[in-house]
Length: 166
Image (tube, rainbow, N blue to C red; front, top):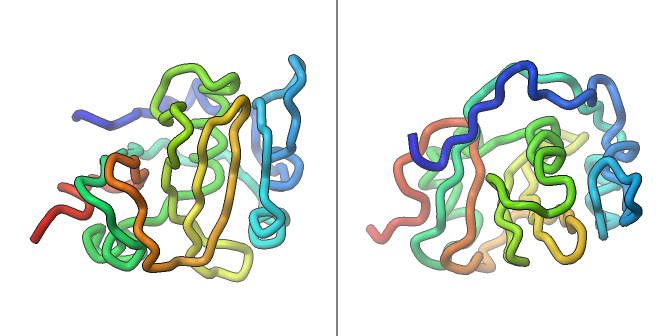
């Protein structure tokens, strides 16, 4: 299955029961669990008090945007919010596997990796994760401002093609 990353139970990092604000910490030192350069204040406000539990082992799919598209169009192509939704646990797991920006499922070329997840109030947000000498995590409200062609969108369900021309 191209683009899929299978998460075996033995590969899950020890993140059970920790608050997001305890895991997603700006730290560029050699001792950092994950080298994180920036976590925006909105990210901490919206997600900081959420527990990041141990999770079941779903398949994460990543699809590359075939053309520029806003969040609404992407969500429509993913069959709505349920088809698009991921979790902080899955994001943390992917970051942990690329803790120093090495190659892996996440693109590490400075361009956004796109995730959709619910904040502490249950509102669906878009998370832009990019590498720039450390991971940068930026949560935003959904918008119709287009994401550029070529950016990966991560989901927990199989999808055909994101933002394909109709």
